[in-house]
Length: 145
Image (tube, rainbow, N blue to C red; front, side, top):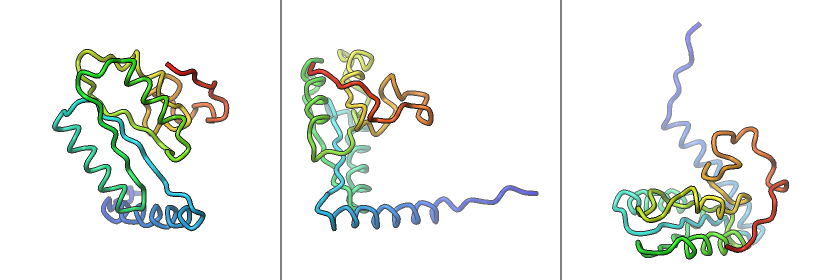
């Protein structure tokens, strides 16, 4: 028996169509799916990637809000902004774009990621164990930085 050949373009098209339907359903209930992407500095590859995220989001009905902090932003500012995004009821997912500038360490910032809104495996409780991560309601409440 041979493995079925997957058509990546067709599958991606199906996924996008499904997402368009799901986001349209949310909009019909006065809810706009919103992803916040926090980028620190202006790494050219990161800026291009974030632009592609915004375009992809737009094509399926997801509002992608890009927050940019200066490259010399202090750790406390990044942590505070992540906390604010976690508390924002209009934001449903958060991505901290990497790489971070050299003076910032992801290990010291990652725990400020809102676990109930983390869109990627960037925090200790989900990294490497997405299928077995506890349900969002079981995460402890974060404290401001």
